Image (cartoon, rainbow, N blue to C red; front, top):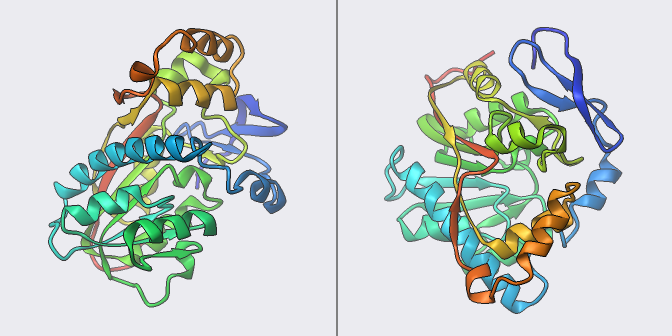
Length: 288
């Protein structure tokens, strides 16, 4: 992806070296973890927040509220009525439900069979398939909109992945991406201790690197902004408990204890570590 040799990064992720492109500030793991390591990470318990039925319900409402933000952004780019929307990495389907409420014709692809089954139960239809976008048959120039939240950082070959999305979209079709941002205030604050530095995150983008990659993959009208999510104090506390940050994780745990449940589970609009990208498929040919 980078056109100049990568340089050693300032930190490492677990036992994996973190390299950085001096041209665009893209960071990436080298070597990448093998499939056995990633399979162990992507278990049925990967989705944080499903300890019991109440926790699952709270998580679902939180994800739905965030999903509404994403669909609002897509609705400004693509007509809602009868537009085919594909969500890549759709999890339990909360975003797809929000999209369907707005008039989109929804489908999804999800690597976790457990999550895909939960999404199809919620949707009341077999709208979500198990696998990756490379496995979608006969879908060239089909979708008016594609959404992928917190996915591209997990992909082994982001350029090939975006070229496949380019094929799936109709000319002028809209793309929305959410991914951790090297430009975020949390990255600047935590530096090498940034909570997004995880073994399963293979690539880390800046605004410059994601724009360059999208342009090379045939997208234009690219807009980049900090992403916002709906989170709760309780969710943030458990997130920092699972993905430990020295000093910060135990401090958040201590601060969480006296907070009553009515406040700890209240929805908060947070702009923390990510960026939102919207773009359109340019032209009709396949980019190089």
